[in-house]
Amino acid sequence: MNIPRYIVLDDAPNDSTLGWTADQFADALRSPLAAIGVRVVRQHGVASGRRPGGFQARGCSRNLYVAKLNKVGHVVDGVLTRSTATGLAAAMPGAGAAHSHEIPTAA
Image (cartoon, rainbow, N blue to C red; front, side, top):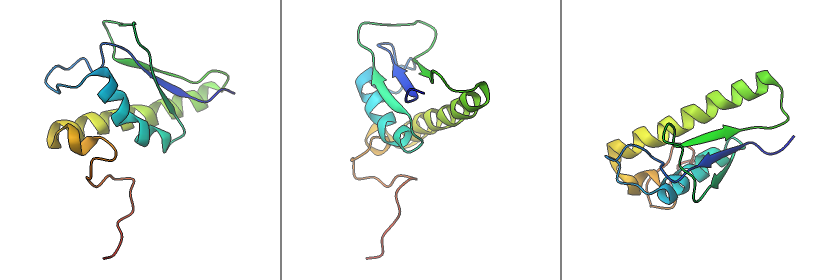
């Protein structure tokens, strides 16, 4: 089985209120999707017009595909929701903001 991947196209994200480029969107997705075993691929020169990207998991069973697709959808929605509530800097990894997948340390 190939590694599952999420492809980010040129017209992502298609919600102009975010003010993101497709590269920024891909960067924001990289860390959270890697945590569930999905690689983010930025596809340049391609626009779909109907969706900002797509999930691919070639060679896996239908049940595994659907389960992983649901996880990916949850992660992507979480990144978009967190970014609209707190701004792009907080949604992107390495921006100094606490992320849900980080373990807080005692000072």
